[in-house]
Amino acid sequence: MANPRPKTRHLLALAAAALVLLPTAAAEAGGSGNAQPGNKTLWRGDFDGASGAWSVQTDGTPAGWRGWTFTQRNDWFAAAAPAGVGCNPETDRPLDQRCFLDGRQQFSRSRGVLAVADNGIAAAKGATVDGSNPVNSTLVSPAVPLNSRKAIELVFSSHYRQAHKAVGRVTVAFDGGAEQEILRYSAARVSANGGGDVISGQEVIRVKVPSGARNAVFRFAYSGNRPQMFWAVDDVVVRTPLPALSSNAKPVMFQVLSDIQVEGLPYTDKALDLLRREAPGAKGFLFAGDIISGPREATQDQQVAEYAQVSAAFEGHKLPPVYPAIGNHDVRSRVLTMDQQISNYVTWANQWGANITRTYYEKVVGGVPLIVLGPEAGVAEDEKNDISDAQMTFLTERLAYWSGKGKQVLVMRHYPFEWTVSGTYGNFYGNGPREFDIEKIIGKYPNVIYLSGHTHWSPYRRDWAARVVVDGGNKDGYTAINTGALAMEFMPSPDDPWDEDSATDRPESPAVLTVAVYEDRTVVRAFDVLTGEQINEFEVANPATR
Image 1 (cartoon, helix red, strand yellow):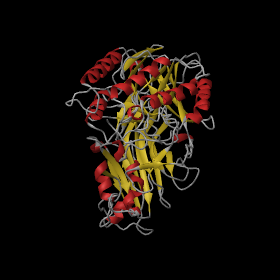
Image 2 (spheres, rainbow, N blue to C red):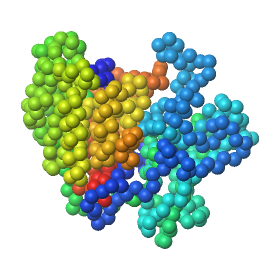
Image 3 (cartoon, rainbow, N blue to C red):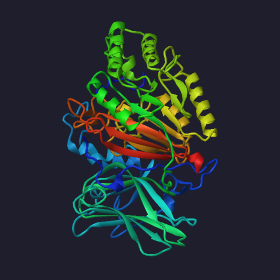
Image 4 (cartoon, rainbow, N blue to C red):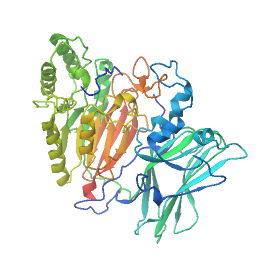
């Protein structure tokens, strides 16, 4: 089994409107256009092979890591590791707090080469950083052609720790003119970071273009006079914004829930009522796995009884057909065979309208393709992580088909991929061979929206949704969504920087999602079950309609 360890899992809301997650980028290749195409990539400024397009201006004497530095993500972590301090959580308990890298490792959405301004490492490597020797460094983009656009969006991944008196600024200058500030991080609460940290966030900044402007230069300026903290940036994109939705646009709606695990049953009634209120005409109910708790010693009667508990919680609610993925808790019994547990899952799913015969399948729901993946029984030893070659072929063929049709595709699997959504920087989420294979296929298609459960990390976190670029895949990537959980919430471990721990003895933010699929975009919204309020929103352009 991939990720076999058992999982029995109110963060602050975003401080400023500028920090709310908004549209992801779409692919440049497209089919039929619409009247006001949006999310067309004008310039892609990631740092993997494109670092030479940027320039860096740093005041003062050059020194290692002083000012903006291009670095492989893992080299950044290694440079920040404390010298002469034991950081093995198996042998060096309690861990020295210096082992926690000041949260650098929590940049879940980072991959490959980053741009980093890190005064902490600079000072550790010998640079003097103090009131008399501040660091002032600016990362400068090339001139980005605007092609007569009236508005553009600057999008980038951002990981920022607020140091005393440190300031991060983003500016734009048109046609060599004066800089205009479009974002500021500082200790002031009125700043875009609310005076605090931005942990694995994505910034989407809409910029009005002056009439006749031909190009734009963006600058990321970082200044600080303390030998601590940092700002890391990745996946910089300049694109056209999506137009406002038409007032008569009618979406296909889905309700989404994950990880009940019996523990979340007390929240199920409220969750289903909330989903009914927010998506009353939903065509499908997507359940991202871990339907039951699945004790390791569960017998057939005990496992069936747990499914019956979930069914009892569903009774009395008017639900659309339920399409579940199978989770690790659904096949955890050491008493039952894999075949028996899959049979129990299929039987339960069909009681709620799924009409399936196995753990992977495709449904077209209200015209929207849904592909569900899951572990299988009897997979040969030369096949990896209980996903058969037949399932891999199925995924490959179906994604190619729907891409050719210009459709956004919902792909659901219980497990997330490493270095994507919240918490997946941790060792627990390291990909097995099959995970790399699956993501490589998905990474070819910017029309894929990948829904996963398993982590129990809250959608209150900035990286609950992410645009993920896979090495060798489409340059605009696919969209990964963490569906949250009804059971116990998880968050960073207080004892190990590469692990996680339960947040409380009960979930403080059980969450559900709605998915609204329009012709030119999909809008995913996350809701807090306890308050009934919307937590977050993520808008994904359909690349085939621009």
